[in-house]
Length: 398
Image (tube, rainbow, N blue to C red; front, side):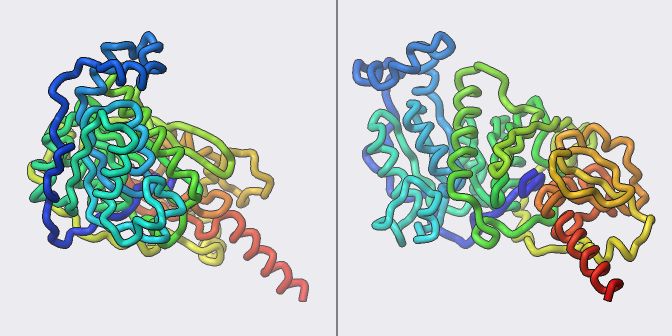
């Protein structure tokens, strides 16, 4: 599930000025009435019965905060601006680097070294002069989060930082704001919507899970942020327009290599520390930096073989891959894993594997969040297991 079922990392907390100078274009539109130019610009929206003039006016009156102006945030903000969302807030403190240009589509070579917020603001306003873009050049933290986000109707999480994800979740819960959250890892992505009436991020991940390195270390396919950013924008527009079925209580998983989309249910957790029946988190806190290095969440093929028949082994592949499974493994395709969670033992070692080890990391985060504290991912997946078996066979055959 994507880097998983667990979330990703980026926005620091060094002190920086929280907002930059107000530009003339920061003045809000005085009316939600559509001008003739806007009617022509948005004519394809107006032709949709589900949108029409009233829907476009709703978009014009909406205020959306985009936190993180990177791989996800740039296509997301571009589609929101093109759609006519009246006020778009950009929250980031980073500068454009050359390595960003492979996927962050609002920037070009001349932008390298310049603040992302203001370069993105200029590009969005050039794309659509009818929208207002507000910049917040600041790292989001427990001190400023409510003040910054409180001015918006809806928040989109386009960061890749665990600590900020929890902060955004907690702040949006306090403010009663919907949170559209997406994340990426290599060739995988995930998307969901947290709303006041549904589960929150802490229902999905009660504690920060141990995750693979962020995209700056592990890499990400350049087109994937565009796919997820567009899907994220789609959820934002649906929420504003009050149409369709938003991903509330549902987690969408995107596999770019297999061109597959799947979905799992995300139930509300009665024991959630934030939105459960007896909440204990009543104030915002900074989670601090969370390490991304591999931890005891992983187990090598050699270690697995040494355990013999002791652990419960679960194969979370979708069933179409060719390699034969680990002997004795239970086959539970990842999208169905949440259905069998109540049946899994909490007091037994559990080893989860997929083909290469990426999907199983997500599965382990889900299992640990559900109380299977001894769940571990097979490092390198089934490929590593078969390599180890081949080495053993070669050794035995001399």
